[in-house]
Length: 414
Ligand code: SR1
Ligand code: MG
Image (cartoon, rainbow, N blue to C red):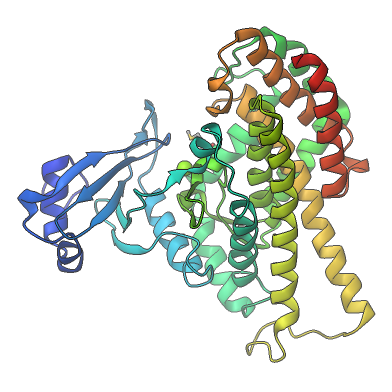
């Protein structure tokens, strides 16, 4: 393999690579030999490093030819290419709610971005008891701006179709989502696992409920056939880094054109996982507040952008009707996104409990019986939502159902 071919970089290789990028070398300052290279790989797929110099710090992410946590699971390298393209597409739209793009190398599949080492992964912060009421509304704003700005509502169809073609090639990661989120959990598959036998009867119920399976099929089809906007594609609480005052969405490697409610639902589903994993009443109330705050912020920002343009950019879909009819059509669209959000949230909860990729939320519960009860509560809630999806059309319905669970849960935990 010659020097122009892909190779997995170690600390020495990273120093040499960055030394060849004048803008980044200047940002780090000093000499390459002085730069500290620290591996911080945390996700399932890639190697991630923080590089610190006398003047500054950057974050470097490199695709591996396999899943990082399972080298036998081979994977094409192009995911950092799609993450770079996502970052360049949404960065100008979201007003500082993501990380700064610095460089992409198409041979090494290396992406260099601003370091966020002063921030904490939101899932970790929640598990540590952080209560940051502004974070969920910021994520609502992020999704609204990124989705509106990449949709037919803001751009000529020619631009949108070009972007759709680009991201339609992100097939390896879309396949992961299709299989791991929408398919494996609903049948026997060696990648599935769950820790507590208390979940087994609920898994059986899910897999034998016609209403639930039809809801999943419908959402699966919508995931692939409703290219409404450029999505993050994996917007769980591990894809968000935050402080109390500053929130950034990272890790857009799963980016694709899809239904806006998919990003909303992933975020809401992961908040619900935290709801069931925390023994603290105030923290559970904070989750209810955050889901409500997220949706209100998303809805307000998306409709404000939609209604703001007195003079829409040339080539975009100018309104043909104004007044009440237009309002009804807009409301119908937002309701559709809300219905998708609820369904995708339930699907995300299920796959995080019985599929391949679990989350750490429940690991902080030390009592095994309580941990099993909490996981079973989350799974039963998601099953209930999917089984009653036709009746659960609003975020208020969804929150009422969660509050009802809270009342029952109190007696279980006592
Ligand atoms: C093999 S990748 C498994 C999961 O990790 C990513 O973060 C996505 O959530 C994916 O489903
Ligand atoms: Mg990720």
